[in-house]
Picture 1 (spheres, rainbow, N blue to C red):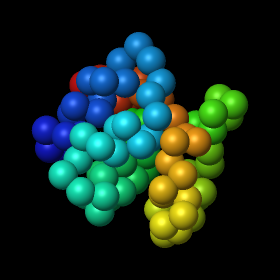
Picture 2: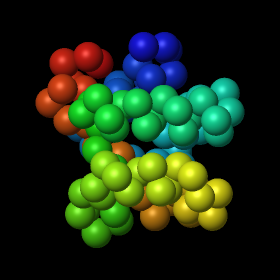
Picture 3: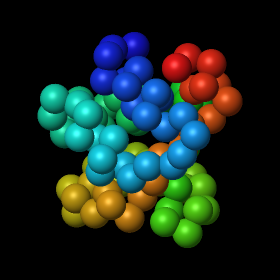
Picture 4: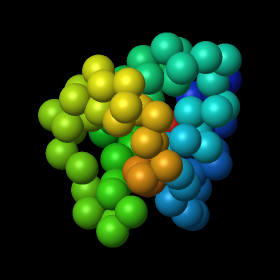
Length: 88
């Protein structure tokens, strides 16, 4: 786990934050997509719609592949899970 991933976990302690803001902690979009996807698959964080509904893991793959969806990242939030909290 690199420093940006640890920073994401640290920032998410106690509150949900927009995906776009968390992605900005990485040096580039490719690294953000790769790392955030890995943390979602590892169960450290979950992706939420603005309504608070959890986005299914399979949908992350769709969002990650579609540039328009990634650019609309402000419609999504990230939440720390118990697994992620143990790593933070």
